[in-house]
Image (cartoon, helix red, strand yellow):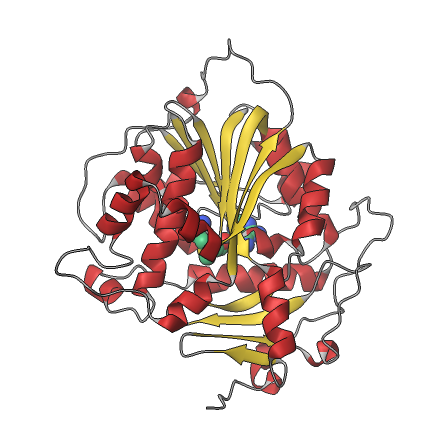
Length: 376
Ligand SMILES: C[S@@+](CC[C@H](N)C(=O)[O-])C[C@H]1O[C@@H](n2cnc3c(N)ncnc32)[C@H](O)[C@@H]1O
């Protein structure tokens, strides 16, 4: 059956006020953000800010509930594999704090969450405080936290967080691709991670798998493809479906995922990501498409048990509900990566940064950060 997708013209509000972000062939990444870059960052922030917390019933009724559970399993596995007791955690694009419980289970010692969406940071704050956990009231988290609202891919976080660093582990889940609108932003993202991690520190993340997306685009009849739960659409400028290796940034597409995402995203060619990360002393430990990731880690008893508890593939007993083929196809659009900051860990290091955080975060404690404020 041939599907129809919204036409480009129906998304007039997606047009930026000015030209497309420029690629800087010299690679210094020092040019200023232009209006269109800011426009799109705002568009992404507004989209996520407007997404309200769901009740447990609403969540369970979601057409992608099993995909959400699968993604939670992938993030939990990454955290269980790499977070250690007492670790200081930097959660970039932390959203509504959906990973707080996972960090708590790993017994981390300190948590800093940053997100561009004001609404999401506020939800994260209430979830951390245990005031309005929509799933259930739970005991307080055992680690102190700091929350910040700002653009992780524009602001010099090393300046803002100099007293909180170094971090043992940095996480950026389902968000790194929002940095790929320009080279300057991609560099800022990686420079922030590198500057804030200790030597030997770990950077874990999940993001769209460019190889899969480009393959699907080339297989599609037009510039759009998808299924009953998602669609992706590229602009006319990509009608040849060719991408120059000299311009690996700013390749924008529109992504729609039922009950989750509806905003512009950018292709992240992984080989460019890896090469750029190396420039910032971040070495690749592994990258795996989500399908491979599931296949591999679902062989380990502890992660089988975790999957059963999360219920992405049913509970192995009465509950036979599982991902639909369409949800499984969406999982294929993503990859998981792990990078390590070069250098030897300092064995004598004592994490004394936890005094920077609080066990209850008030509205006034949320720090709003912008480049203008930091650079003067
Ligand atoms: C798909 S959500 C993932 C949230 C969270 N990491 C999780 O896995 O539940 C993407 C998040 O990225 C955030 N985001 C997008 N661009 C950002 C930026 N430039 N700086 C900080 N956060 C950003 C959004 O506001 C949103 O909360």
